[in-house]
Length: 481
Image (tube, rainbow, N blue to C red; front, top):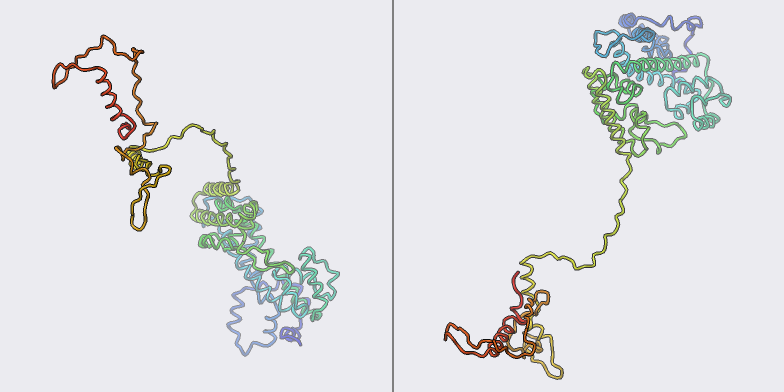
């Protein structure tokens, strides 16, 4: 079943002499074409004119051979052959600066025009190999593949290795054996070939513009070039459509400029990185480990936007601010790649076998003294062998008193602590025989009776008993410090 394009192409009679000079004859002024279109009425438009427009790629895409595009390409060739006299302070009055701005803004139009030509080429080559458009997704690779295969029915003799990966070539070769396509007529193949030439010509013009803009990036955007490099900076400005358009894009969207969502046939899409573009594939990001590339790309995108806005305001024309941004990025990348500090193995402390110093003040000592073991509690815990202890009813229970019932005298005195016990100084005795010296006086002066005759031995015994009562083992043996 023939398509509409085939039926329209069958009505055409192409002149070979006129087609050999199509580049010279098709440079028609656009104003004249518009004037002709205004004068022409729907009734005067014949079927042959419609078919000619549908089968002529130059009627579909007019950008490449337009006067404006050819003029820019010629001026680029002229300025590339000359020594650039543009300074960093150049503005809109500089001719070369205006050319860079115009050329940089044209790249977005060229990309859109390539898509238009790709659709035209795909429609006209579908009768020959309809499965090819699903196997080769890139428009330029598709055009090169169509140009290489041509109208040959045996593609095993065609070398596609310079164009496509080996896995894709194998899939194309196997699919071609079962294709439902047919051989194109000479007229159909000429239309397809012109579309291939148009697509590749647009790509060549785009590469020329990018190469020229890249060579002038140190002048038009010095800070951006210092941050990300001249090559990547030119690609970013080309994808954005100029420096001013790039400044309006937020940093989160700059990361995806130049992203390719399509994958070649034979390769899994699971291994493809998502939301990556020119910045992710730049030399700065590619030099870091794979697990840090997303973080570095995010940092680099933010600095690129700041540097581009500085360049748009014609500030820091020597690129000093861009170099500072790049130093900050390199410093952060180095900190990310630093190894974790090693844990220092400390030696065990020397064992302290002496008594430990325990913290505590007067309040703690008072509390310990209040809850210290008393003689009454100690006697309650003791029992006399062979005797029944006294018991006291306490609610529903009974408790034994032990030897507390037999305690006489100091029942609340705490147990003496040998560490706090005051030791009386030893009295030196000069009388080793135990007898009272004959020189000892029997007179004693007392406030009651005045001079009193006493027995020194009885007096010493009385003092001894008083000392035992007040300074012996009991509650008064602990003194405040």
